[in-house]
Image (cartoon, rainbow, N blue to C red; front, side, top):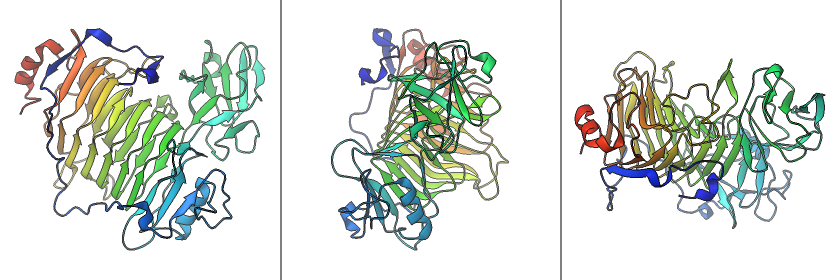
Amino acid sequence: MLLGRRTFLEWIGAAAITAGIPSMIARGPDPAPAPNAAPVAAPASFAADPNARYVSSIGNDANPGTKAAPWQTLARVRAALDAGEVGRGNTVLLRRGDVFPGSLQIPAVKGTSGVFTLGAYGTGELPQINGYKVSNDAWAQHSPGVWKLDLRPGSGQFSGNTAGTSTNVGFLKAGGTIHGWKRWSLAELTQDWDFYSDDAFVYVKLGTSPGAGVGIAVKQQGLRPSSNTAVSDLHILGHGGHGVGIYGTRNAEVTGCLIEEIGGSRLTKTTRYGNGVEIWIGCANVLVQGNTIRQTYDTGTTMQGNTEGSNVAWTDCRFVGNTIENCNQTLEVWSRGIPAAGTGHIRCAFTDNDCRDAGISWAADIRPDQAGMGTHLLTYDMQLPCDIEIARNQFIGAKDNFVRASGDRQIPAGIKTHSNTIELASGQKIAYQNPETIEQLDAWRARTGAEQG
């Protein structure tokens, strides 16, 4: 637990108690995918690709992309993927310690075998895929106490993610503090750091100009892997949409990344969104392992979606050994569609993760839907069949409860929870609108059948 990362949050503290099944010292192996699943073949070494391309903030996109003469931008990486200059069996590495403004959507990678690998080289901090538009000292007074900044590409009023076209702001970050009070009209700007955005400007309520250096997160996904990709060792931050969005993807992995400061942009009308890692329906053999995910508007991890065409299931999708902290929820699961054979969650798992302080986040007190939403496990709808193992995790601290389920308020059939450590504050409810407190864990287990074995 790194309290230094949470200076504006209140930790549950000495009142927290542990109840339930102790953590396992010798943990068994993670459930293996089905025999017919095609595993991602992660390279044993990045050096295995003699034609690896390198990217550095001091490079040049006209360079050949060698280590001595690297490319410079994420746009150049995308162009190389589009053209088939790099594809399956190739590696692209971003230099550690460098900041790469913008986002990266990996298109369908060309080639017939192997995986496309995106990773890091050098020493130091993880390379950043940084979505912030960073204000120059160019704010204009719109009205008394309200300042505006032009967020359109080419305005010259911001640095950082200068090519990002979105002006749909999710949150602001100034002086290390996230300001999340998004308003829906100029008339609603009443408190310091309230903000509103339209098709051109962001407007901020403040007595003096916000000045230079304000990070402005806009609607975009930080990273979108495609099928047959392996992504590792990246720092993804400052995006108003999802950190990592995985859609229609087969045979992919995301490992060893730091994903933080995510979400808050408008999805529709007055609904905001933003998850750390989202696996949408239609994915198969996806592994999300060994990442740290924190400070998201919505959930840290999710497997969700509506059936559409051939996208009817999540098959062998797994979250393993991640650290998930200070997200509004830790894991969200929902599905909509007509149940049939081969639909829903199939051999999916959430195992051996360290989950802390659900609902104790930058967005906790600004959400319109707060009742019981500060929770580790959030489920609703669940119209399709479900086969998910939730095991050997640590669920430590939560704003509201361990689980919030819709319908009958019980964990849905098909979600098998066992061998987890659950730690809540004294007197705190285990499940939303259930009677048992954490001291009554055994009674809750006996009544619900959850946490057996």
